[in-house]
Image (cartoon, rainbow, N blue to C red):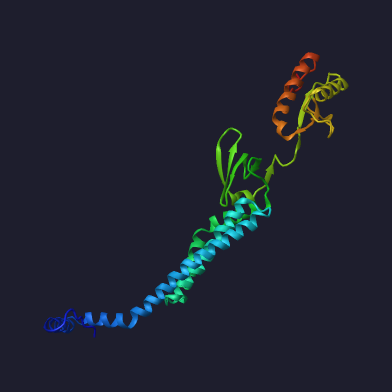
Length: 295
């Protein structure tokens, strides 16, 4: 029993008597006093130890994160993957520190671990689609089928890659629309990267009339390609008869250009060929049918 002695003599005896009367009137006061006497010191020491583990653990985690960041930056690992690995490592280490702190406080971790496992399973089932996108994002970062700035065709969307995230990618279509595409759809479809190779081939099909001079048309097409400043000599451009169509003789015209010049050169060649055909009197025949009337 704890007694308060505030003064000596008769005044002190009155205070002691009043405390005894309170204890007899309110039993929970005595129980609280007994609890503090028995457990306060032990609880206080556990609390101090737990706080010390949290502070020291946080400091150690910071040192580990700094060392890991320096080590990963010395490698050729992508920056997105580095940030993701840092976040995961920090979360795991902090969970370990917190659990060690709770165990020092005397908290039973078996039940807590079971609750966390069940919660993780439920969350995983609810976010199954997002986890699939997340795994696909890791695959994109590691394999690198494209980079920011590349012109691609992925999951049916054509455009330039603006951002690559762990759950989705942002593409800007060639008509200026931003499209957010889930990573799962990208990795499960064919990915065309138009920017990876330094040169590309332009495929044109040019038709002339059956009455035109075939060799003269071929020579004209070769001259147009050879005179264009952005058409590469190596690989050598190809001009040849592709098929005898219903209404025209079709030439395949296949020059090679630098990747960044692809669109502009294709438009320029199409225009030059049309103007040259007009100047030479060659025909671009319309589809036609012969109709025979029988009486």
